[in-house]
Image 1 (cartoon, one colour):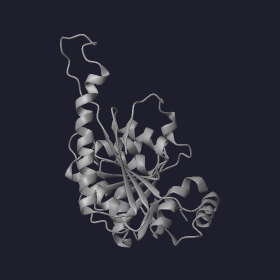
Image 2 (cartoon, one colour):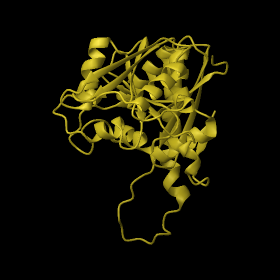
Image 3 (cartoon, one colour):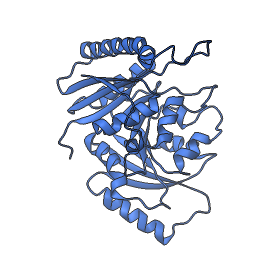
Length: 304
């Protein structure tokens, strides 16, 4: 049971796509006391010109984009209050002269965030074919806070069932499961654990032990477990499983050399889990918050 208001961090670039993620996040926590933190990171590209490095100070570089960001964040909050007013919700805005990844990781450490929510852009022919580059970079950062990535074509209104794709060959601790269990408990959602296996896979004694630990950790919420044969790829298999089992969100544990890393590298033809209508909830295997590894002198400006 979570007594304190839930804290959600939403990175925004002020696009219609990011607004879609904002609406989905607010509706998901409509009946829950929730603090929403909106963050915009700006780090302007400086073209090479014939002037000395001292010609522009750091303050000069930040002033205009910072002013614009603050104005747009204020307008975003005004829009939320006008269209999605909820007395159970409160809002804070933050700007950062940083890359989005570094800004988000630092904010996690400063505000004890429970969940990151952002959109995925779907197929892209530029840098990352499976999701938006910012989402991809934040997943790769493997911060201990869960990240909910919502596709723009997703019609998510409520989360009733969370699919949890897990490699049961790996041991998992209650601390690692806690963020996922907290989300499921808060939203009164059932968890269906799925294990993608090869045709000749069989359970070992250690896998039975891991499964027993898993069931024990889920004793207070609805729990189900199923093994499914891999079809073409891990992501395609999970996509088919999600459709069949009516999964609202697919959760994955972000291990090194695990499902998430494999899926972000898979060359799947056109449609993949990341391009479908299924949101992803990525949970880190790291107990310690990776934000603590950041240099504490990174500048971050906060506006209440």
